[in-house]
Image (cartoon, rainbow, N blue to C red; front, top):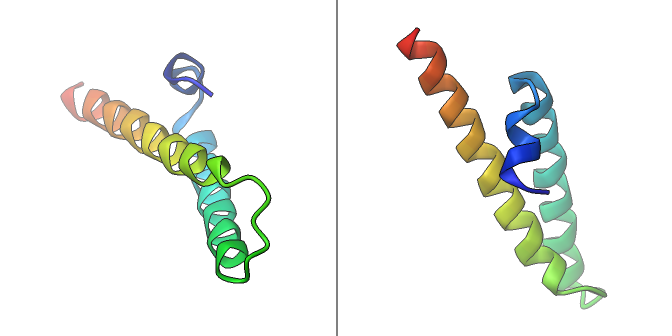
Length: 67
């Protein structure tokens, strides 16, 4: 997922995606704690994707406040 794709989504879609990413991050942390993690790189991807979503949400909020 890249920022261009995220900027095309509505804030509601972005919030839904952020919730899904947070759930996935929780599950991955749980798997790590029980030594069941298959793809350790996925944790990093999920963290960064969540950060991208938050950044785009903040950009959209700033635009709305400016108008």
